[in-house]
Length: 244
Image (cartoon, helix red, strand yellow):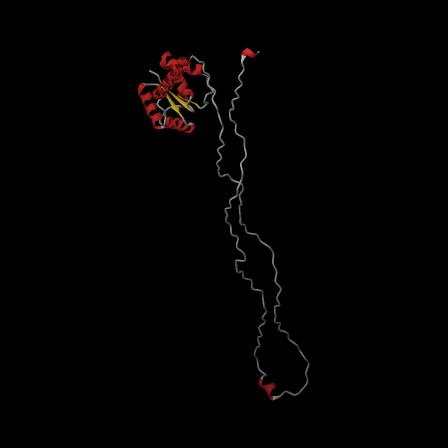
């Protein structure tokens, strides 16, 4: 048998938390309704809704109690056990006692109606509403710096002087008598001379020539927030019909 469970909340955030807890505990999103439009619904619509649940006798008290709340969470349970679980979750999330709210409103209404009846006056209440400016702050991203390193190549050149050796042979015509030194060397043999040359030798050395440091500094600044707030003002103008 389907049952309806209602949770009234003074805080919209508590109502949203309650909805999330219901979903986390297996309730489908289609079976959970949440209303956060305070005072947007008429007493008649609230009364019709509560009349279908509790009957005509208590519908007005329940309707006004609901209208005074910031949010209402309604759970359409498929069974009594599911309704009991929904009620526990709503209570843990901070739901108000519906009966207590309705009884309190009923008592207040009875006292007010009794006082009006005894005085013989008609009474109309005009709520004085005043907006308050609540200024907070949150952190947002205003920019970012990204550093990326890469390897590049560039041509370089160095000049140096290199030494080379060259063997050269010269033949010179001579006509003179042979000496003893000439005769001592008058035998077979060979003479070998080695040529040398210098070549470039290249090596590389890696050296740190610069460091890039990345950091943040935090500064505080003062900013004035300007806005407008509204307030209900009631002008009373009395007139005497006898002076017309």
